Length: 343
Ligand code: NCD
Ligand code: ZN
Image 1 (cartoon, helix red, strand yellow):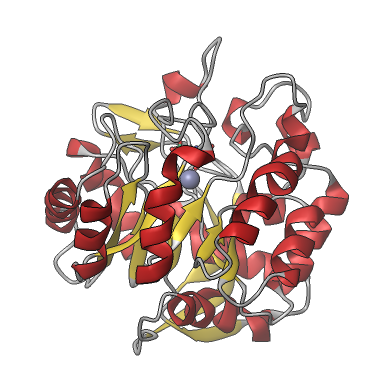
Image 2 (image 1 turned 180 degrees about the vertical axis):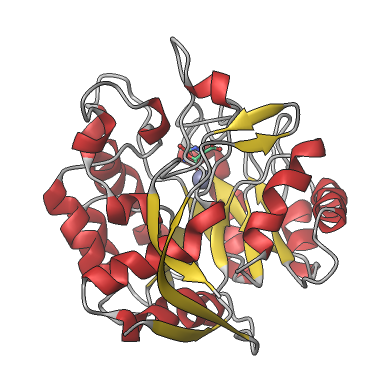
C-alpha cells in the first residue's frame, strides 16, 4: 500500500505549553489532528475549570485560520481538588478528564498527588460523573529501578485503586511495558491506554546509541525490545482499549542538552506519519484508522471526525530544529528521514 486515507485522527495525550510557543507547536498538531487532549502540567498547573477555559482560548488563538483543531481540556488533580470543581468540570463542555501525576514523577509534577488516598473523595465524584482519570503510571520511589516504575505502579497503586473504584473511567497514559498491555487488556472496558509513537518505534538502546541521546529521554523511559514488541501487538490488535496519544512534549534545546536534561520528546511535527511507519512495518496499515481515529473518540463518548486525511508512502527529511519561541527545539528524527508523508 502506497497511500492510505483515514478519518481525521485525534491525539489523546498532548503537551503544548503556554505563551508565544503555542504559535510554534499548535500548527504541527492542527495539520493532522482534529482534536487533542491537552495536558495541564503548566507552571503553575491548570487545576481549576476557569483556568482551563482561559488556557483553551490561548490555544485557539494559535490555531491556523484554515484549520478546525479543537483542544480538549483537562485539570491537574491534586490533594486540594474539591468535589465542586469536579462537578463543575463534568458540567463543562470543554473539560474532558483529570490528570493524575504522582508528585515528582515527571516534568512539572511537583504539585501532583502525594499519595493516592489524598484524592479518594475526588475519585468518588469522578466515578459517579464518569469523568475519566488520566494516569501517569509510575511510582516515584527513587529506590525503585527506573525501568520498573510502571510495573510497580500497576501492582501497588493501580490494582488496588481499580478494586476500590471499579467503575472509574481510566486511561493509563503512554504505556511502555508488556505488563501494562496485559493489565489493561484484562480490565473492563472502562480502562484504556494510550500509545506513543516513540515507544512504538524505539527501545532503550536508542537512549545510548553511540553516545548519550538526551532527545530520546522521556518518561516513562524507553524500555527493552520485548516490551516494544508487546506495545506494537496492542496497537495493531484492533482492541479498542488501545489508542493514539503522542505525548509530544516540547522542551527548548538547551534544557534537554543539559547536565540535568528534562524528560520529553517532541513528535507533533511527524506524529501520524510515524504511527503509519509502525503500522506499515507490522503489515497492519488497515488497522491504523481504528487506532488513530475511532477508538479514542469512542472511549471519550465523542463523535468520530468526519473529514479525512491522506498519507503517502514518500520519504521526507525532518528539519534539524524547529523554532520554539525565542529558542529552538529538536524534533524526533531531526535531520533524518520519515517514510510516510501527509498529502
Ligand atoms: C512530559 C512533559 O515534558 O511535560 N514529559 C515526558 O517525558 N513525557 C510529561 C509526561 O507526560 O510525563
Ligand atoms: Zn505526557
